Length: 296
Image 1 (tube, rainbow, N blue to C red):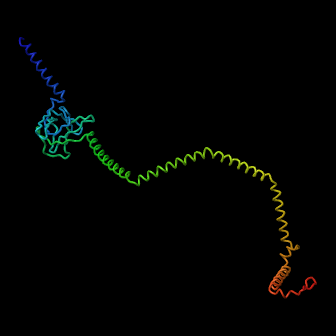
Image 2 (tube, rainbow, N blue to C red; image 1 turned 90 degrees about the vertical axis):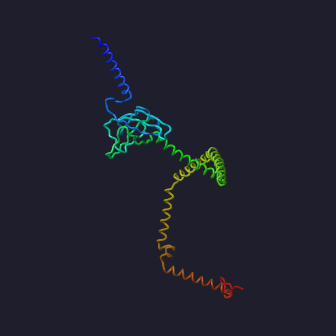
Image 3 (cartoon, rainbow, N blue to C red; image 1 turned 120 degrees about the vertical axis):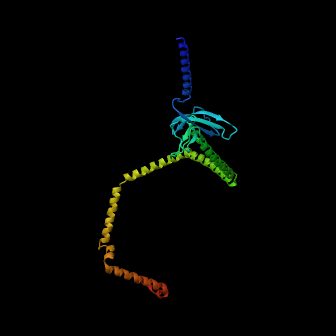
């Protein structure tokens, strides 16, 4: 019983040490009850990678970064030590990829395991080949910078072309002509405005007066005895038709009596012959008695 107190103190100290050790590694994300394998990778720039950063395989955490050491005398100054579950086999060709962990800019290690199975595998303590993958922000920055450079080059070309065009005398003359045309359009607009406000109302009033006069004329025409006029005209046409169709009158006999037409036509022909002979031989008719008297 004399050593019971010392035994209790020793047991309590051991438990405390174990709890401190377990708590330390638990806070670092290391499961001390799960055996792990350690691997090493070298980088020229870790881009903000820190210890306890996760080690992922296709989005699943399989380990963490234990330590980062550096030697700036080397081109690949940073050595990253990581530990992963020893159940994971890393075939030959597996690479440690420094990648972005989310949109906030954190870094992690992504194990790029080849899809085709290779019999040879890395062992704990081996150094794996490395590469750096551009994150979303870096990709956007690279794309934006390239597009910005291209846009700036095109803008410079456009400005140079525009300066060359503006320095051309023809462009200056064209701009001067456009200025004169604009001034003429302003004058024309003022004239049109004056015509619209000053003369157009009078023209509209005169048009209204003319329309009123025309309506009065049409009203008088409508009020006229148009039926009586048409009746008289119809009677006249009927009488003319009767005269033309009647054989009793002189006009009807001329139209329908062939003998009378022949006699009249013969008389006209004889008269024309006499007039022609009179013009040709006037002396022949000098001694002809006119109304029973002999012309001296």
